[in-house]
Image (cartoon, rainbow, N blue to C red):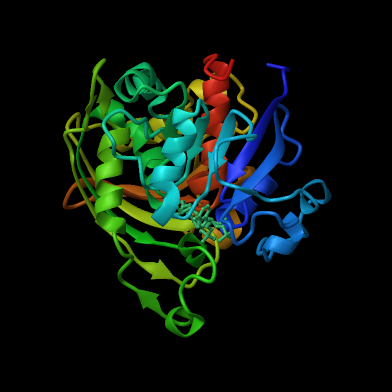
Length: 349
Ligand SMILES: NC(=O)c1ccc[n+]([C@@H]2O[C@H](COP(=O)([O-])OP(=O)(O)OC[C@H]3O[C@@H](n4cnc5c(N)ncnc54)[C@H](OP(=O)(O)O)[C@@H]3O)[C@@H](O)[C@H]2O)c1
């Protein structure tokens, strides 16, 4: 595990690209050496190719790197992708075909039948589809994806409950503005307001949840046979998606059993002590008014899901709140943890 691995970022100048740069600083396994973006940025020093939107300054080790075009050639084998969805399909495929391991944030390949949509705490075995993907496509490389920023919090909250047989899920989101990238929603539209529509988000959340929580059957993914209904809203919060969830469980567990499931939840990333794995992936908060995005989203490096207010739901059985950091656990941090899991499986050797 001590071998250092060179990595690059496709879409390094964008908002998620900047989160990758921050998240990879000081990483014990991965050395960020290569930055790719559009031909508008290629050839420029990184500091001249973008406007840094995150807190703090562009790290010194990155600021003077020259941005490259997103074409296979001199890039490292392992690439994190934060590319604009309008171009990600072909570019990610070209890199995978050329032998690269593409660990992507973009939505483009998530629902393809031979592409893992990975949450390391929930479905690490979905990586077993990779040989099939490589056979199907004649690739030496591969594409692995992480879910949409709203899906990840929901699946982290549902993961501990899967043992009870999930049959119905109703989720309402309050999603931060950073989820829309930069500049995102106009301030005149969001300040003092709630926008009850995020294009394409609800079907994404419903389908991705079923794929992630489903089973890999050796040659295909069998989705979780649960009905999932999502209401997605944009709210005037900078970082952190809050979601209220009602769930029906076939096993009809008591409240204490559900609390115990949340409190004791631990999975492969924790057992293997992967560098970006939170010690407790799910943290139940006792306070009646938590979790809250401003107070809790950044805790545990933004990698845990915070849960609270478990109580009976007169319609579906139980209800609770879940909060996760949308640009860390919902984007850059998720992809880095995916790559760490792949390394622990020997898939980057
Ligand atoms: N924002 C979030 O919270 C979030 C969460 C999860 C997933 N995502 C997904 O992550 C991806 C990036 O989101 P973002 O908010 O970071 O977007 P963004 O700020 O608009 O950045 C897009 C990146 O794509 C690059 N790009 C655009 N056209 C290109 C081309 N033809 N060839 C190569 N690179 C090109 C841009 O480079 P230039 O600067 O050179 O144009 C930039 O680096 C999207 O697919 C998004 O859906 C976002």
